[in-house]
Each structure stands twice: as structure tokens, then as C-alpha cells.
Image 1 (tube, one colour):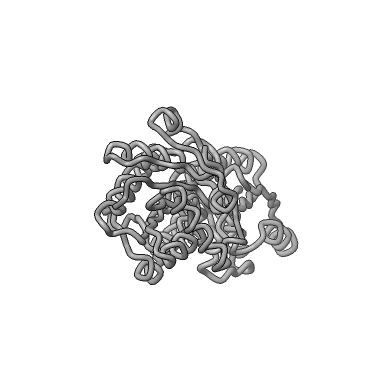
Image 2 (spheres, one colour):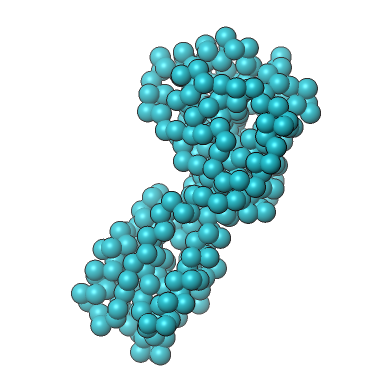
Length: 320
């Protein structure tokens, strides 16, 4: 029987994590459970850093970025012996189940604990939107809007100086941020890991646009597709255009969650607690076909949702 649950955030922070912590805590209390917060993710679990969470402890955090529980990356947690010790510590603290908020790596840690007979669920939290078992991850909408705001400001300068603005965004493995920000901002081109980068074709496209009196252009580059600096250098060497580079960096991970992220955090939190109580734990809480569902870890590992290829084509059609 589950009476007490733990909650932690792990890996890279994402807007909406605090909203999820709040949702898990308050909904669990409403269901008659007590809640223990684990500080700094799996690293804190190994260091025995915990504190009780009540309704007031999570008050006024829904609109804050980052995570009040802190987070960390913990390579040590990949070891079986370490995982077993963590499960034993949780039991010693009379914690009956664990809610993990994070990305694929965080999910693998939760799955490892489940392998030692400890019930877990994972709420997807990463701005990259590239996690298995879900079509949406907390932080993605906020990150896209953050990028959009920056791109719109950069476009003002690019237009004023007749330049090509190359903007590098996050996305080592997937181009969701670049693609969606590109569509929303009216970018002339996006470079993403899912498609082979052809810089010669990019230059031809930019020069053609320039000949058609489009004197400034926006190129959004996912970091996993190419280095923004290399793209700028190539354009300089192979065209008569004037490119410059902006690397947005960690600004994409910060800031208050969007309305959508705050809402999804609450929906994911409710499903996470319900799954622990109804026995459908050891699963990823995800959004699939606009429904919040719990998918067992083994099954979720087979569900990786690709980018929208039609959207990729549309960005380039409309950017001409």
C-alpha cells in the first residue's frame, strides 16, 4: 500500500518543473498521501538529501522557472549497486513510491529503481521535446516562445542592416525547437539533426531570396545539426551576403512556464499520482493523441515520436 511518495527533478531543468512539483504535492495530499522532496535529483538521493513537502511548501512556485528541488546530473547512478542502495534508502525512509520529473536519462534511472521492486513513474520534463512515450514534454512550449521572442528582436536588426541572422538553438538529438520556432517566426531556413545539412543548397536559397529583393534572412540552426559558427563561416566564404551569429544558449531553459506548460504540469501530476495509487506505475506519464496516459517503461521505449515532416517542408515553402 502506498502512503508516502517521493518526488525529484533530474537532468536539465525545464520550465514547468515547479508547476509539476506543486501539482504532485498538492494532489497527493488531497489523495491522503504524504510527500517527501528529494533535493538535487539522483545525486541528492545518494546523499540522503530530503525534506517533507506540504501545501504551503509549494505555494507560489507555479509561475517560477527552474526547480525548487534543484537538479543535477549523476553518472554514478548508472551503476547497479548504486541504484540498489538508493532503493534501500527510500524504503528506510518509508517512502513507498517515487515520482521522477525529467528526460530520457531520468526515466532510465526511474526504470532502474523499478527493477529493484520500487514503484516509480516519470513525468516528462525537457525543453527538447524528444522523450520516448510522449508527444509532449514540459518546457517545450515555453522554450519555443522564448526563442520566438529572441528571433523577432534579432530580425529587426537583420532587416535594418540587410543581413542574414544565423541563430543557434538547443536540440542535440532532435530539432523540435528549431523547427517550431522557425515556423512561428517565419524563418527562411531551419537546420535540424533529422535532415542532412546541405550548406551549399542553403547558400543558393539565401542568394535567390536576396535576388528577389528579400534583403535579410533568418536561419535557425539546432545545435545537433551544425555549429552556428560553421554555418556563418560557410556563408561568408561562398556568398556575397553578410551573416552574423547569435547563440541563444541557456536562456532557452529559464523563465516562467507558459500557460500551456503550467496546465500540462498539473495534468501530468494528477496522472502520476493516480497511476501510483491504481497500480499502473513503472510507467511514463505522457501526452499521446491529446490524451494524458501512463505507458509502461518497456513499451514507452519503443514510442519515439518524430518531427512533423510536413511542417519542415512548410517552413521552407513559406520562407521563400
